[in-house]
Image 1: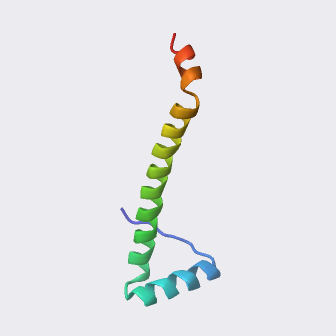
Image 2: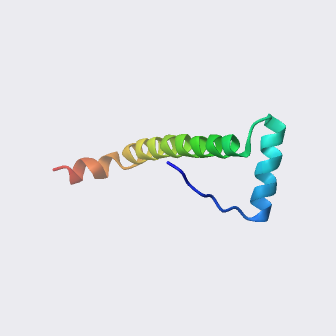
Length: 65
C-alpha cells in the first residue's frame, strides 16, 4: 500500500541523519521505526494486562461471580 508521510523539517532532518548513520534509505529507517513502535506497543500491552491481573486479582475474582 502506498502512503505519503509528511514530516516536519526537524523530523526530516533527524530521519535523514539516522538513515545516513545506519547506511539505509529514509524509507527503510521509517519502516524500522514503525515496526519497533508496533512491537513495543504489543509488549507494553501484554505487561500491563499481566500487571492488572496481578494487582486486581481479588477484584477480578469477585466480578467474575
